[in-house]
Length: 445
Image (tube, rainbow, N blue to C red):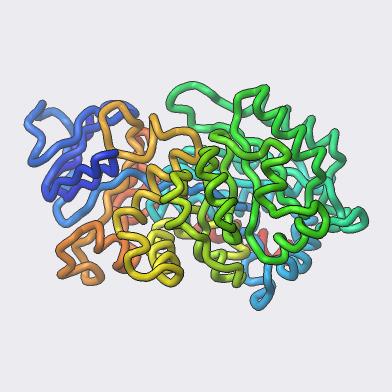
């Protein structure tokens, strides 16, 4: 048993329970007690001194492209479509070595920023590149994060009216077969699973309607979740209206791509009808504020989505459009962008923390196991050190975490296992990861 005590506690449960001085008790991979004051039980437990800290659920990253860690810094002044056109030829050269190096580095950076569960949307499978999905799953196991890789796909190339070149798309039947194979090989539906697969055709401008429709049928026949990009830019909206005669959300709806088993990346450009439909169907949203800012895509209507009762989580997005890759920092970015759109009452610090925890767990269909500190839930826990200069004098610890600078971690547990201790990774060597990533990035350049 592990007891974290002497710290402020933000449980992010349905009642918003908090303790100014409390404890969390872990046995095996589960939380067994949360409460105020010191723990009064067995003295043989391992005690963690949490004085000066805030303990929260581990953060949940709902959207990423980990391979992009090897291609950061490109297309610095481009909108999404121009950025993609510059990077597609580079991504056409990725292989197992590059993907493993990029995934390990990206997941390590996520861990250092308080993330315990991450998705990844991998949709580029060059011919001869090797078993890329296995490479990133191996990287996640080494770092120690809970992992939800999404088997992506593209089958609509430039010559057929899409955006990507032929070099990075797949045959439709081959993409569907490879997606089924990924589910068969890697998906673990059991409680406490470390790896779960989702089905994830890339976007309206890179995927045929047939692949979208049949991918949804495949996912539902295997009881796995669905993920895709949608309504990210005004250019995408114009494309959907020109090619399909409707908005992106109407297009997704027509193909069976709305529902409680679906979460969508971005959802920036939505009208009132789209917001209402997403809320009514329980469709989740991966909000990626820094990436949307980097590409000038716009600001997602997070307040309106929350009011419509749509699940909303946070995502760092691919590191080629969000070079920092720190999920903890997205708490502040989400808060700021919501207020730029709707004023200072548009989002509170606690609502932002909820986006990064229970909101993300809802998007991934794991709110029964993740996203809050409650007995019976998985011991995915972040202990943030707020004792330093950057947070000194802020009496509200949640406000200190969200409004203040990036907080170091005193401890990060994933299923009760320490992944970060005293601000450093305890599972992998950070310098080795940096060296491997630098080599992979140079080879791709």
